[in-house]
Image (cartoon, rainbow, N blue to C red; front, side, top):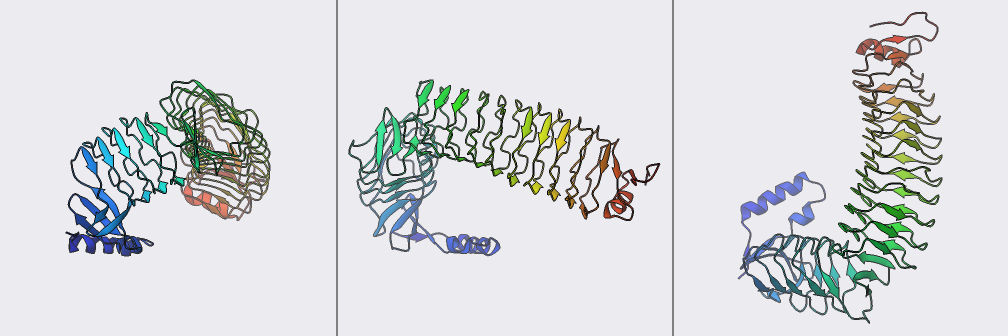
Length: 449
């Protein structure tokens, strides 16, 4: 029998919807309870299981809920159902949602029905006991590595219309992408086949034994989290045709060392090389257009960053906490530096900023204790809060006449700094109001407010 959730719960949900733009539609999808299952009704009149609260070991999910055909398993629906050892999914099921069986550690077997069309991101992530899984011929779409962090061995028909399996590695024939590499495989080296265009999202995530990976000349994209936490990885050959390195692509690959970025590379996603402590890059690619937030955070092996002309954006904290970084060279085309982009770099002594730059974000060079001087371009218009705070060695800094905004604490705890400012300028007034020593270019003495 269908039982709706309490009116109090629905009222609270609708109130939340009013406070969060874009959530009203989701809040109006009422949930119903049928036995151990909670479900919603899809606009086509079918049921979507959103939560299972039972404790069965071997579970046959019913084909209907209160007379409605079960067509989908929702996101996180069976999250951490520790009792489950076997699941049979119903005929008529079309979709399995993102992280649907996340961390079902005891799960040993899952029977997928013919007719299933899609499996979502990380659907079986962390199902440590799941040894084999047979994919139906009907399967037409998979999200980011549904089998991440498992020991699973996939089986499928050699005539499968969409997917192919070669030595345990799963490929999407239509997209020419590598979908899933068996994370627990003991192999220390792997060569991606010629013709593959994309390393899929999370495809190699957690492959702890891999030391080197050879990528084909055909490759144009490395997806989000593709090599996330590949802790033994030391060497990757990036092909000349590569255009995109996705978010968290090599995040926490602590042993990844010297890396050559190809000239055609255009974008590096957020946290792409996050905490790659051994990483060093000698030459930065000429075609690079964007670097995401935290892209090289705590990359202790970086010593010099000479970024190309044409680079449009550098994200927040992109090169923060790179303890060996001594030199930064930025060229024309870059309009702004994000928040904390070069902060907490205790070895940084030299910075070149290009003409045409208009703004420095909050904390842009905060806690760069060895930075003695920096030349700000005449095009600069704003300096963010704490942009040069705790720069203990910073001496004279000439503030361009066009600067019309300086944030709170921009030079706080920088005891040796003196601002060179134009008479009757915004910077002169700001320095006087904020107690920062300043001087005029034609003056013989500097002023202490």
